[in-house]
Amino acid sequence: MSGNPTHASRENVMSLGPIEIDRSSTVDRVAHALREEMYRGTIEGGTSLRESNVAASLGVSRSTVREALQILTAEGLLVRRPNRGVEVRRLTEAEIEDIFKARRVLETTAARSVVQATRTDLVALTEAQRVFEEAVVSSAAASVVTEAHLSVHVAIVGLLGSPRLTATARDLMSEIKLAVATIDRTSDDLPAQVEEHREIVSLLRQAKGEQAAGLLEAHLAHAKAFMPTTG
Image (cartoon, rainbow, N blue to C red; front, side):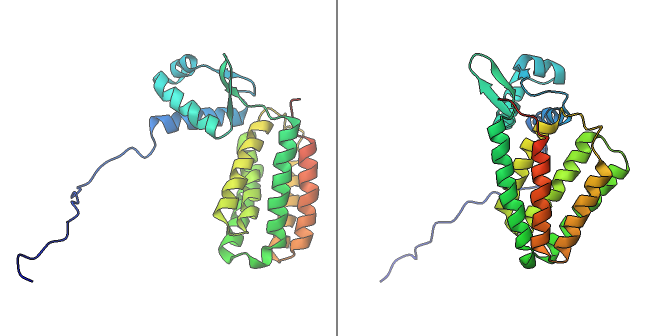
């Protein structure tokens, strides 16, 4: 067969030089700022967030605030109310029960499966415990201590080696941080909490999963009893 050879269609690839981009958009920064204020308890559960007020407070456009509020609503930190816009979520007793049920399943399963955990995940757990202890010793702000504390629990779930389950644990902890933001933590026995977590981590590092799971069960039951709820 004669004729000119056919040529396969060629992909038109654009040659790119250096491009500078903003890794953290204004929308992300606004969402982060509002999220942190919620976790600190500065913006309490049930507070209505109006676009115009938030925009004026942060010096950004209403459209930027609108997108940031959409992000926080998708994360479950805000809820939309008919004719009232969005407000900071307040967890009900049923929601608290469900969150702790999910935590109990994830964390005790991870403990009982610790023999399958990788060295990398065990090191990550040890580091999370170190950060928690450092936050307590340095008398860090309550929100910082809470973040460090809950990070230990996320690291426990991380022992399962499943990014999806770890992401689920992080989402659960975000809801917990929102719920505990306005609790008076001055009566907390932080040294006792540190010691309790140190024992759990030590058992996990020794692959004593059943014992660690038992301590986690008791710890979570105690923590749930102090959670604030609405009806």
